[in-house]
Length: 395
Image (cartoon, rainbow, N blue to C red; front, side, top):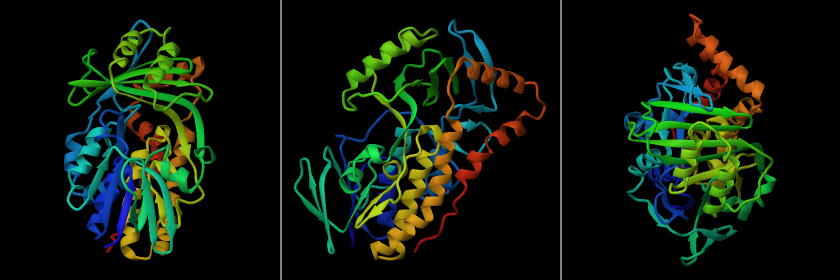
């Protein structure tokens, strides 16, 4: 039984562990966090990725946990509603599609519920070195003793340590998309009912959407900026940076900034990871570590789910990792490229004119008798990209 070390207990890592165990491997998952991570933003499962979740027997549960957004509104600095839309939302897309929007921690908890038996989890540790030879890999850890594995997979996100150790410095593969995003949990003080509300000013966006049956909410603060230099592990520094940038904003932004001081914070750049290859020797990358498309694409979660399924299936089809990795690269790369291209389509400079045009377009949409068809046409690139790969049945 081949032993596979997976770095990262997120969506990609947990999904990979499940499928590897199903195919007869012995997976170990190492996660830097001391326990399963909570919080984070809502994520989307679309197209082919829904098939992966279904094959795990989890589609019904995932749909039960859906945010089930019914629409969104845009407001000015005084809180006056400028426009309401029920055909789609900024975070979830079309409201009448089969796609599922779900809180990230709800999804990881659901995936983990079926990826326990036969899977070893090591929390509070991380990989510091990987040595490869013809027979396997020797892995060293920050806290635990060195161990031997047949294969190593980096499923450790945008700032992957495995990628840095094997492929080189992050800056070679990281393509910044001019935007930063902060997300944190807050009380649902706006009493939003499966709804999201946004306030936009040039270069900045503040938003709130209801979560977990409206018992709580998530706040989003996004802004365009030249690339910033900050410590990814210093949350207080990040909070101050965000508070300074949004200090002059109206609407409910002052309340959001106060809530941010006591909430777990996700803050990072909108960055795309672009690589010529996702494997090297006995090491592979999956999900954001190898091909993070950035939240601007709306497809990071779907790529993680599909990539994990394809990698595990490729390894199951042939126990020779070289041919398996080659098959994984061939199958997943076209899907990756098509979905990464969505980020460029969604990247817009939030000038005052661009925002005015967006609001006017949404207002005009209300009076079109065929507005549903208009919205579906606008979302066609996303629909086509998310369904661009047909799942194989691996034995």
